[in-house]
Image (cartoon, rainbow, N blue to C red):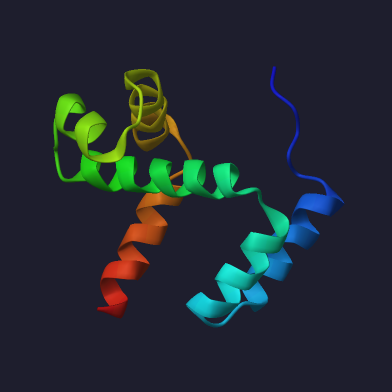
Length: 97
């Protein structure tokens, strides 16, 4: 069984993220908190998820994002069997347009 992520530290991190109000504030915070590679990996997974929801092929996704097929597969599993986090975010992003 995986590690429990529901800790006081993770909750505090999420609460800090929820205080951010602009993209510039997000850049400042995440550049301080994450390495460049961590931030690029997270954003790559979000793009992979977006492309999967648009029914793009693994080949198209790999070519556009540089993600491996194992990363694409892992993101796809999250979309199918996960906790709907991507769906919530995509829905709210769509509503803001």
